[in-house]
Amino acid sequence: MMLLRGLPVMFVMLLALSTRAQTVISGLPSVVLEGRVAQVTVDLGGGSIVGFQFKDQRLNPLSWTSEEPGQAHPMGHFLCLDRWGAPSEAESKNGMPFHGEASHVQWTVVRQPGAARDAIQAEMGVTLPMAGFKVARTLRLAEGAALLRVTESVTSTNKLGRVYNMVQHPTIAPPFLDPTTVVDANARKGFMQSSPMPNPEEPAVFWPQALLEGQPVNLRHLTANHEPEVVSFTIDDEYGWVTASTAAQGLLIGYIWKTSDYPWLDIWRNAQNGKPAARGLEFGTTGLHQPVGILVSKGKIFGRPIFAYLDAGRTATRSYAAFLFKIPGDYRGVERITYEAGRLTLHERGAGPERDLVMSTGDLIADH
Image (cartoon, rainbow, N blue to C red; front, side, top):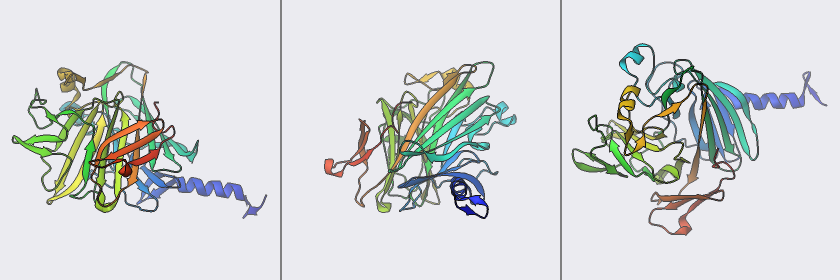
């Protein structure tokens, strides 16, 4: 075997790959999964997916970052666990952050990115001491497509069972997000988080409509006014999905998941200085943005649970898939998505099958 400065060439190659896989980006320890078509970047300070982009396009929809201090804070697509929204006043005094600990602590790499069945796979984990949870995450990026599957297993280390919530918080931002960006989903019945308790589900709305002072607002769009800021919806189909497309940028990002894992879609809109600043395409186990005590008192909305329960020592596993498509400059948005026999098809609004966007998914959207 050839030697290079006393080291086997094979060892040097493996070392180079490992260095490429776990690196420092903008001063932050990160993990990079790189296939032939797309690249995914995870910031270990909070575990956020901060990059998902085509290798030949480089436009990253998940460029949003919070203004919170500290190295570990929410960015891009982050995990809300063990809650979605604010802690109680007492919990806050004890140090529980908004949206829970998962995006505020350091994650650890368990397995560096490497080839695994036509995909690049990596594993990481985190311990949430206040919540009493451990999280094991597996990411699988398709080698030949812009398709990412994420599976997360939450294990309770508590001696007693407890109520909790788990919400995925993908957040798109400029330059991908602009006033022409269109958000589509198969959401159904919903309500505005700004409606007063104890019955915020009154009045009810239906996707994509919300209400502001009694007037309809189309949530597919965001320009200068983000009110109502957060609107939550149920999903009736076996799979939930949400997409954001910016035709002028030639790019679409989307998510698909089992509604048995995540029965709620939560849409957050934020505008600053008269322009879109962020859009949360959130999906999870709850649709009510309140502390746990209020969730337990409320119980259900539209007959759907608004919290989950995990017994002592038990594990709950949930998955989702994210995807990118290149789109034409006159793309009108997604009317519906079909998934069958390892084939994901996006049907364009008001168009025929010749405009369908199709991706072979293999086992990356299979049940966990």
